Amino acid sequence: MHAKHEKLLDAKGWALLRELQIEGRLSFAELGRRVGLSTPAAAERVKNLEAAGIIAGYRAEIDLDKAGLPILAVIRMSAVGDVLTRITAAVRTMPEVLECHRATGADSFIMKVAVASVEHLEALIDRLTPFGSTSTSIVLSSPVTRNIVEGPGEETARKATKRGKP
Image 1 (cartoon, rainbow, N blue to C red):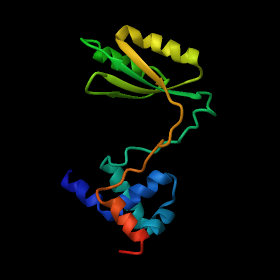
Image 2 (tube, helix red, strand yellow):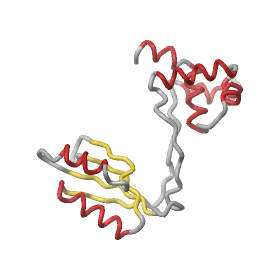
Image 3 (cartoon, rainbow, N blue to C red):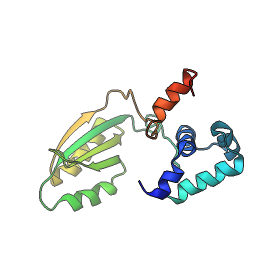
């Protein structure tokens, strides 16, 4: 970790990040109250976290089912040769692809996709197969959809505080 980031990611920095991951639209006044900082101090710390690129952005969470994309699937793709850059370029243009990760092992790419129907999923797979072989799993349920990123030792410190210890 960069020395500059170490200063930003002290206990207060991680507390700010935790609160903003839970509720990204908090006012600086409320954020400061939750982490024990004044409003100006909270605003300055957040500005510095943004400037350092630690906070990369703020986004709305979309209910995919209500948005007409009720089927979530994971597509694993194995590709060899010079198609890797073409796959990357292609999936960047596919709105169904929510995430795409280049991976080690048997799968060259792992993608999380959202589609309107099984037929829509089939059409998406058909667009991918010219680049390599695919293996698809439809998500039945999601016990964890998003966890909070915590700093080293943060979970232990939070549990100790809940038990009444410092």
